[in-house]
Length: 103
Image (cartoon, rainbow, N blue to C red; front, side, top):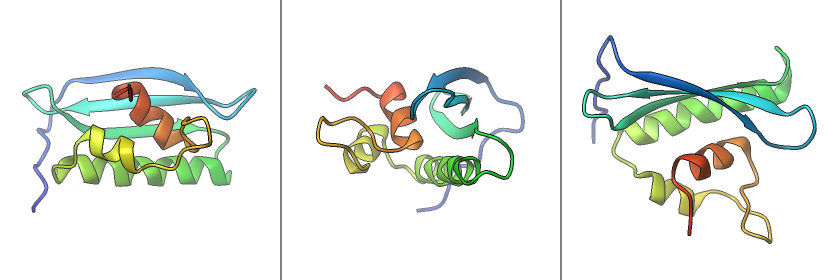
């Protein structure tokens, strides 16, 4: 399946998300298709050049590619790593849960 291209100008929103303990605040930016379907995710957090920053950014790229190729948030939410209580084990999992809570 090929990726659906995003329009050059698109609706976006940004919010903060806490994950991973004290001083672990991430800025999440979402980009949407013209029909309001989610098409891209950016995750920024940690200090520049820290591993968590690189992992967050790379995870957002992979999440965006999955969405652009037709994967649903519910499928992604069911595939992410979770702890014994069912909470996401990564920042990308926390973002997915925020966008599509698992009941």
